[in-house]
Length: 283
Image: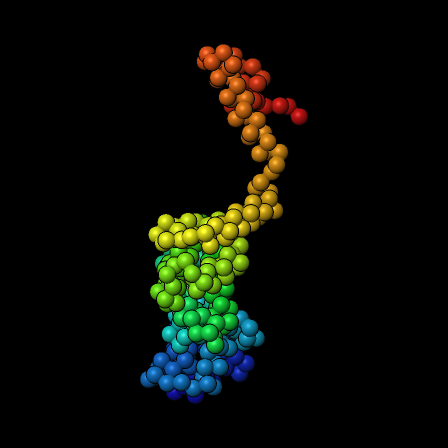
């Protein structure tokens, strides 16, 4: 039967209608990964699954691909790299990235891959591979928060996800929460994060629930500096705006608390309106 399906859904010699039949493609994928008819592993069949699931395959465009189904199968057979590739594609799809249930499944899969990567990192001989996978997970967390789709952005709180990773790593590594083993993960996440504010929130939460000493302070300072730098690059931080904000605060204090100590009421003059931010200037 599998041989029949292989001929029927062949990317070049098969039937196009069959390749666009969602149920047939799903069944073919399930046989290819070894779920049907019974659990098994066959490298040649697995290659057929990759030809459909992976965007790196020149054949994938010839099939009607259910990305969530392909993601679930990738997780079942523990192919994290393929699963992460599919998540990246899913987040580019308006239809799926706007679906709350699909996004919940995506987040659950990312959490599992992230947790598994910590187990890999704890093995010194596989540490580099574990960090490589975790880096991809962090990148996809960031992609979700920067999504053009509101539902996607609201489906995850990265600071909470990072805090959970810290907790799991503490248990996995046998750390006391403030030692070199703990900072192996913390430093990696600090260096790889493109949103320092999320790491900062996670670390503040971490320090409140763990007995952290002076080792954490320079990391927090570094995050604050990076946060300011990124804000400046995005145009969210302007020296001129900061000076105006400071000036408005100063003017407010001068207007409300003059030197004689008596409260004064606003006369509606130019300085009063500037102090409250109500001054408009025609260009």
